Length: 285
Image (cartoon, rainbow, N blue to C red; front, side, top):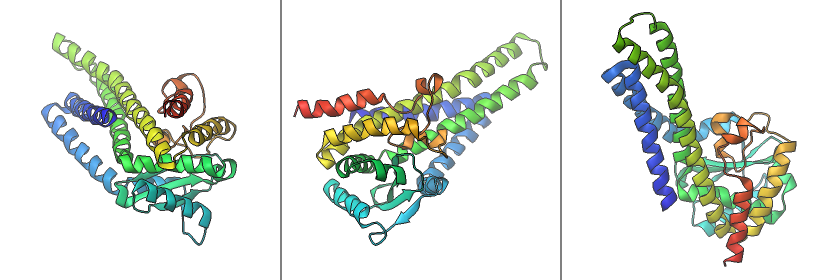
């Protein structure tokens, strides 16, 4: 429950930040426009985000006849989790990874790359897909998608503020104009960073919760821990070709490789901490 409350609080901050930036761009009218834009983004994310993401990664839907073992695994895990059977997809990519999407348990989909089907044992793959079904059960896939949409919009408005401040710099030299310029520049720099940090916090909290719930669904915390360890190593060797920052948080491991600032602003919690928590579940059982 704490993670759910935290996610709700962070999403509220994103909305407030977006409206505040709208006010910085266009005053009261800008705030109204930003609020309406937030409503449109919520609507679009609710109805179409799953289709957009699956299409983005060229995911192919499968049936029991096409891939009986993998489809049957998802069916068994969904039954254990008390979920309707989701649509099942395979992504033609050798980088091992998986994600879930959909607006609710009745309209959910899970996707796995060809690479992850090759390198994991049956028990490890069950742990990964149980993790993804936990996202569906916890109803946090839609929340994370909306958070990403808001963060992208805030960054876009931040760019607008920067350009507006630059072109408006010469229009007045009075104290009020100078203060307005400084405020707009500060908002343009700080707001996108704040949005990124909020998006990270939403993603990190939901990954811990999905690990715990997924381990409960499959009944093998150590299998999931072993899978995470393999995926962490393999994703560094075989990076995902079409990975995009806007959707990186949806995957079980971050598909974007790189160190430095990339690791500092990762949307996923440290892999060592995730593995330690899963191993702790066995010790404290």
